[in-house]
Image (cartoon, rainbow, N blue to C red; front, side, top):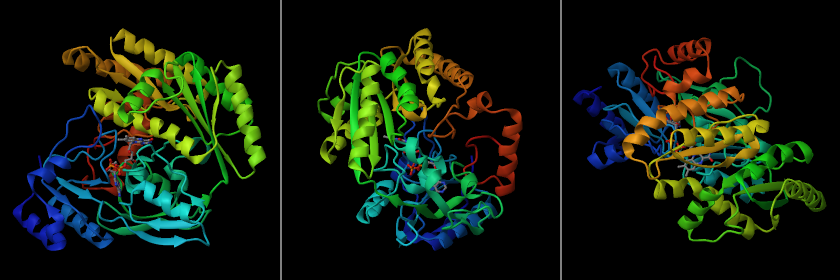
Length: 466
Ligand SMILES: Cc1cc2nc3c(=O)[nH]c(=O)nc-3n(C[C@H](O)[C@H](O)[C@H](O)COP(=O)(O)OP(=O)(O)OC[C@H]3O[C@@H](n4cnc5c(N)ncnc54)[C@H](O)[C@@H]3O)c2cc1C
């Protein structure tokens, strides 16, 4: 366990003044993220820089004294990425949260990494534009954290994950050097695509200090459909049919099984149509032509009914749409409150294999006598299969969870999928990575890490051990 020498504390204090914290309550608060099944570990100090120059100075000192640094956004991560090395430095980007430039002519916005995602969405809205990144944690997560995890969310089906909107990054490299990748160019094949190497690198290859994102014109019309189904199987079987047969690309196609809806409704103290149905789908369609949007949602509604939907509700105003989304977005938070001992997964498979994934996951839970619920971004093949301790003992949970996870990851791989679609590997899935990628790829990840971070001081022990 690293120990920060007094001399280093003094040098950090000189740079940061009272934005350096060593009080117990800070160390405790910054010891973990939202990954339910991982223990935290206390850092030796928490730092709140306000400029790229300060970040660079901190990283240079960390190299000199060989003390590990863990970058941190809002700590909403679900793979343990922001859990610090015990005794090391937590570098919180929370105070670097400003708008740097809104460039209407180029439809680009440049912000600091600590800006909360929904703030970016709100700024874009003011100009009749959208920022299309939309994780369910948008009200609390930071854009820096979204980039580090390549966060997905509810609109990936049409607009792609966070990385699809990132055009330029200013980065403090693990050596302390500052560089900029990309820019405002829509096309760029000059050198390697470092922007998208940094996206999803989980804070292991650099600290993102400035971000340029592309915005898009706001579609004039949005309509959401809610389709309850008798059973999970009926709802999930409709997903590939909706993608294949409608000739329409919805911006969202979300799935919630009955226990997920009950959890979220209890948490929010609201009711939901057909609350006893086995599962619900939410679809959202966006466009500029009212009649074309109506035509598209009718097509999707017809397919839902053909596939056995008990009803198709149309939410064509902002108020009703927001009510639906509130329930969908509350599921993860409700889980943390009502079922704190759980393990939320984010495996991802080709959409046509979604029914097989859910069937197999239920069999795995049954074989290990664990509870399970499922919800998520079914339209892009990414479902939050969640194992729950339920009434079993904690010993049973601890013994069976590891094997159940390995079984789930094997199943996903056999279905042509991957073990994490949006939450990342971090600490949580590190030991399972060899199930998903071969040795050649693990060696490449290690080699890239060594080139960027020769002293292995930036978020060490995440994704792989070097
Ligand atoms: C209720 C809830 C709902 C969620 N819904 C979704 C969802 O729909 N889709 C989804 O993808 N995720 C979701 N998540 C997971 C989480 O919100 C995302 O992974 C998010 O991107 C993390 O952002 P953060 O600011 O909290 O980052 P943190 O948790 O603080 O950090 C995450 C990782 O990013 C690194 N990092 C942070 N800032 C920087 C930076 N500036 N430079 C370099 N590295 C950095 C950290 O070291 C760490 O490895 C959800 C989480 C919760 C609790």
